[in-house]
Image (cartoon, rainbow, N blue to C red; front, side, top):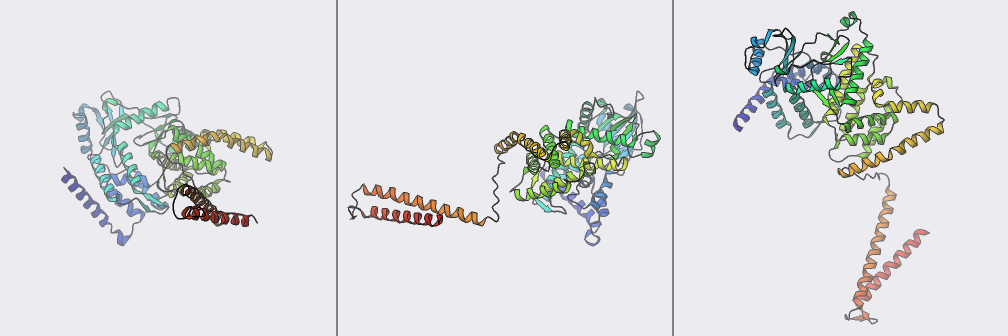
Amino acid sequence: MTYNTHSENKKRLHEITQIIKKYDIVKNGLSPDILCRILEDLGPTFVKLGQIMSKRTDILPQDYCTALEKLCADSNPLPASEIIDVIEYEFGRPLEEIFQIFEEVPLGSASIAQVHVATLMNGQQVVVKVQRPHVAETMREDISLLRKIVKPLKFAPSVGGTVDFHMLLDELWNVSQQELDFLIEARHLKQFQENNKDTLYVTCPQIYESLTTSRVLTMEFINGCPISDKEQLQKLDYDFKEIGDKLTENYMKQVLDDGFFHADPHQGNILIRDGKIVWIDMGMVGTLSMHDRTLLKDAVKAIVRKDNNGVIRAIMGLGAIKGELDYTRLYSDIDMLIGRYYNIDLGDLNLGIILQEIIQVITDNHISLPAGISMLARGIVTIEGVLAALSPETNVVQIASLHVMNELRQEHSLKKDLERGMQSVYVSAGKALDIPGLTTDLLNMTLRGQTRLNLNLAGSTSFIDEFNKITNKIIVCIIAAALLVASSLICTTDMQPKTLGIPTLGFVGYLVALILGIILIVVSHHKKK
């Protein structure tokens, strides 16, 4: 078995090498277009990796990220016969016994699955999402091979900082695990329905559980208008600004209230039907714990307040430190980041860019974040792209402030009515109220073994010299005291020879202790003068 796996890895590695050789990147260079074509030829694992990297402007230049976004578009479809074979294998019966009509031309085709429209025996129209044959095995094999290739590597330099290849592969594995099991996607859709049951303008497709397996997902056919089709939306008399505001408001609810959000909210996954926003393709979702959501809100508030300590507390609470942390550099980076946005109006802020810059600062300082945070950053960037095309006047930060900074906005309105002196009192009181929270954070960090004592003594040469002198005096005192005690013990014996009636060794000890005492007195007296 080990031999077979080894042989398969060697065969796959040879295939990868041949594909890369075909493009002769040594001679032609690795342009954004060539990179996309290589990833497409390498197969679904590398296409998915490219999709992940398309949102990582902290790692790749913008032109490469823009090119990689093409990988989110439809892939070349498989012949219908291969898709039908998968369906019949999963349900153990002929296609004719399952569907009255099955459209052989796919509605859409992606790297992992393709979607067909079908009609049930009762005449209900549905969408059938079918996993490509052998894609699961191929992706597992590719990821295993990539782990072996990058095993000797920890971090490597990138355009913006450092790249943790293991973290990227972990994210690729987690994403593929979600998308390769359609039963997980079915559970995601059910949870989304439950979370949004009281939101009248949001919905998602219903699931047909009896016709759903890990490789086939049957769901309600949504005859809606793509959110990217502005011409059709205009004909249907929709208000773009209203759609944009409601879309953002719901996404903020998913992130900050539910802690369960669509991790790939691109234009193809959002439809409009009967006045409702319909979220489709829940194969990839992000989750945030209550703890993470609270810290995210605290971080946003701290940025607006220009509270560097608050930002760092949130970051330390969210992330895990890898190696030694340079607090001086971290504070400096946070200072620069906050200073850049401090005087900018909330309506002019781009939340996606801010999140990416925060993640860049965190990465540069060797702090790792939970997967949900990086997925959130990509999701925000993606949805801001949707809004830029549909409703440019809709601003994510302004709408997010309704969830995150309601108290802060009230604080700002109160400050307008106060005198300058009262502002200081108000801010000081607010910081005083944070003391219990600071204490709790410190205790929690101590219990987790994350507490560090950081003293920045750079440039304090005189202080260090003085400290050394005091230390030397203490050492001399200890030696003199030890000599006195030892000499006294010797004097209780009848040790020979003797000087002035006491053992000579004890006499010498007393003499040395006396000399040391005189030196200390003289030095101290000279210091006072």
